[in-house]
Amino acid sequence: MKLFRSFIDLPPTYYSKNNSESISEEDNLHDGQSIEDVGKIMISILKQFVQNPTFLQRLLHEDTFFMLIRILTSKPANNDSVAKDSEPMYIRWKERLIAVLESMTFSEDVCQYLYHRRCVNLLTTQWAETISSKNKLTIADHHEILIGLRLLTCLFRQSSKARSYILFDQMIQSSGYVVIRDMVYKGPYEGKVLDLKTSSIN
Image 1 (cartoon, rainbow, N blue to C red):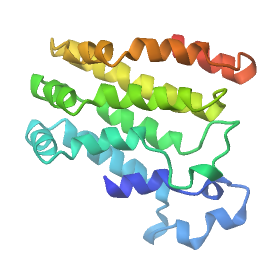
Image 2 (cartoon, rainbow, N blue to C red):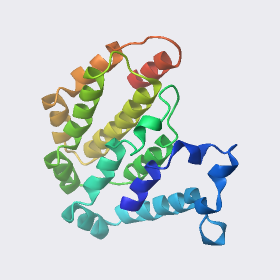
Image 3 (spheres, rainbow, N blue to C red):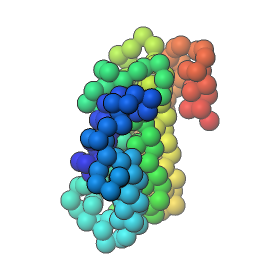
Image 4 (cartoon, rainbow, N blue to C red):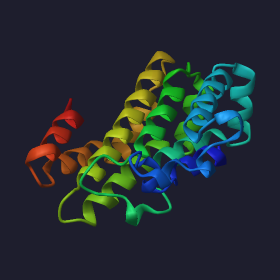
């Protein structure tokens, strides 16, 4: 998990494929494997782990599962250098991690775990802090919010399949729907940002 977290911390220059320095020998591992390749392999392994009931119980018992959620809500260490007027490139790693959660089948134990770790509250609190601290939301902010909404949708869908609705209760208790409304109301209302707001609503 910690290794995967380091992928999100990759500097923006790593993704500048037109910059010869970004594809240096340091970016490649033995046998020509790139960081991108290693990340894909790790995602494939994680999917197999979370689909195994025995291993999943161990993730819950050791509280490692919560690290998955924390990674999805974290910002890169070099966040100040990330462009705010476009989609951050590190978002691709978060999308892959959500795909891991989407491949799971939740049990009542998983739902109880997520509830007691206040995962829904973690998301809504982060959104509320972002909204209250800025006069307007950037394109990067909206992409982060979209990732959170995709995570939230995944949690709700999976918990519904398990016939557990405590995460929905936590959404109400944390004023989550009010926060989403405030996000939609927050400017600006033009260009790419407006498209992202529309995606959030849909």
